[in-house]
Length: 212
Image 1 (cartoon, rainbow, N blue to C red):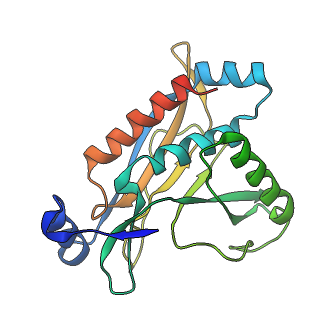
Image 2: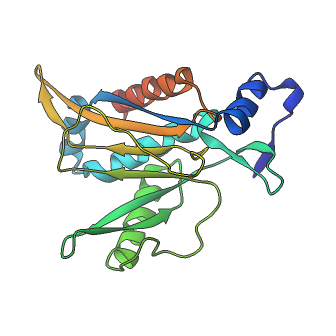
């Protein structure tokens, strides 16, 4: 369900209007997450890292109000009760990728089953969008497993940055005895400030530390 914001009571109403109308801009923020303990627990349980990481990211997005923002047909802002994820599959033969959307579920087993079913059904299809019926309440997540990076920046020429988060994570590598995973959030400044994105990273790290 989409719930309109009561603008007169919203603490960010002036910031939203400014970054939507006067200075429409977004930003990308990268942090490195410690996945050392998580990887050990996943190996013990025979769970693959990729679906586990997608689940943890989706859970954190759904727990971050500012990352669940959208607008209705009249441009009025509000928050979705739930956000589903659009993720990518890589085609090894021609080095292209395709987007697939998957319903979020707070139960990991249900989520993983849906994710794996979508990848089996649509993973070999070519094109930018290969699963029909993408809902309006979505966010994007992709992985660049070939690169352990320090920073990442996205550019939206001639358009507005998305109110929903676009999340990218790379290859984890050892740094000072710990396995660190670079992860980047790109989002419109109208939806979230640096504080909200920083809290997202803290929440995600806490979920990583206690999951599984």
